[in-house]
Length: 251
Length: 212
Image (cartoon, rainbow over all chains, first blue to last red; front, side, top):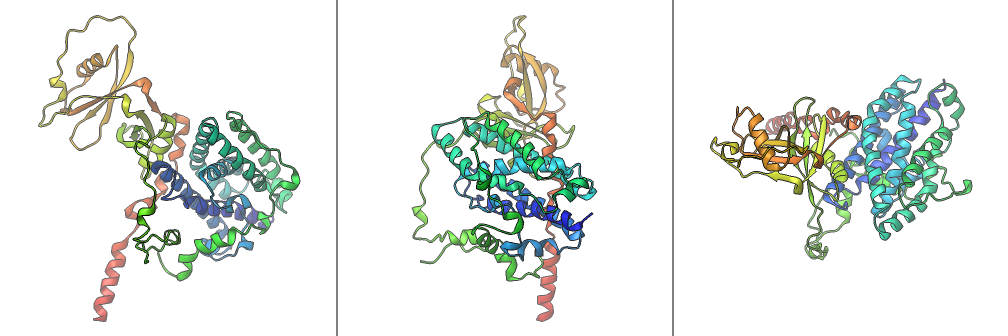
């Protein structure tokens, strides 16, 4: 089995979680209500913790230690999808992104828990419960606000229209897709997208929202091969600002 | 204008809060809060449910979402329930070993054949502590529920306050969602014991001393 294939898979999972965790943590202290602020911040912290679990697996495979990998790379060395690096915007966008991303993550973890690579399956199984809360949170809010007032429906709909082509970019295929599928490491992005779409559609059907139609050309691919929007580098610069003051400091 | 908030967090720095613009932040309108819900937690399987505190929420479902992150953040958790504060019927308080049950006087209850409903009964055993779930009784109204509870309770400890919540108004987490607490014991970074600062402080003191 090609180790590069597994590394590519782990990097994109971990980078997605780290970047989204950082983005969502921007709501800390300024969330819509105190309780939602705490809930959203906790989930952001979970995401960063989840990324650590995958960076540790990578470290075991010979990659640099998690802190170095997280804080010392430039934008083009990151494998996250573009969806997670977009600015947090208003809460409507952050909620829609959380909904679209976490349902993808939940489907991904369900499949990874069956992986032929035991270490990956173990991490996926361990984190399933956390992701269950994240999807529950997204699900409940989208259903409430997607049926509440003209304003809430309109806001969510326009956030959804904007985010959806990026969300489809989550499923950008890896150059090692066949290798991963044939070796039972992972079911593959195409299958994952299908399962995700069914679940997302199921929630959207219970709201007044409509899933937009997106052509193949409109899908925002590139993140997995290091092609990012202009938003990623400033995020990385800010995220690593304290770490870079003294990379050898013991915290 | 100098910033009055010095922080290592670049996001706080960027806000540029100064003594001059501090009051420029908008004042929220009055009565802009959601109603409160009581959050009731079972810290460990079999340990029983205990009131944990309140959250503000538009409904029970969201109160549950909020309760999980406000009140089950550390150690372990095996279950949670929420109930609107408006649905909690509370007795008067007593103190000095006088049980509130002893003060309850009952008119003779008429034999009632209607089905009645269930009530969850919570006891406060110590002033300043939290109410804990004692049990469930069936009654036609809250008055009878108190009577039933008084009959069934063994009175081993004085009860300083009683809460009654109609079972239909309290929402317990389903078995199948309890896995949301699976990784809770691993979140040791949320507990002070994870930060062994004393060693570092002692080492620092030693260093200062030896430099004198």
